[in-house]
Length: 106
Image (cartoon, rainbow, N blue to C red; front, side, top):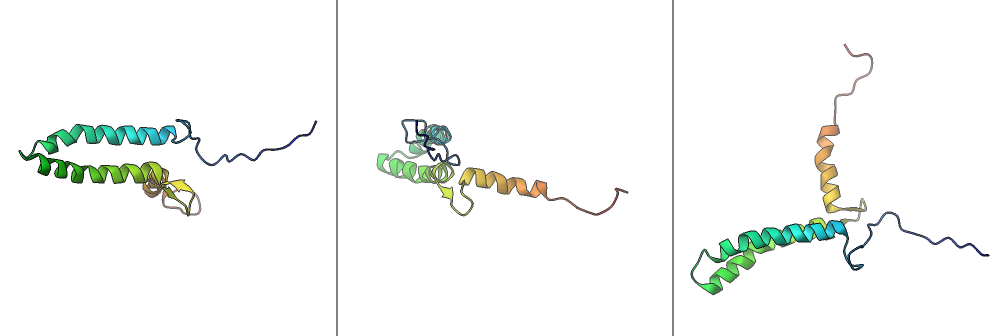
């Protein structure tokens, strides 16, 4: 019997939802959609004109869509990390910096 090793990419995340998106990406989509669903009716009802309300709703939804898209789907190729993990590491870096000195503690 012949044995063949199959290369498996252990570094990338598994696309578990229909083979298209991962659980982490699905969570970002749900949270972004819930945020938009929560505040768009308020923005739409600020004016009595339907066209202006629709335009204001679209404009106010763009930042949430961009942030959700960048954090959920874009990758920092230099470090081979997703942007959410990269930002968590960058934010935690300041806590890791300490005062280092040689010798016993006085």
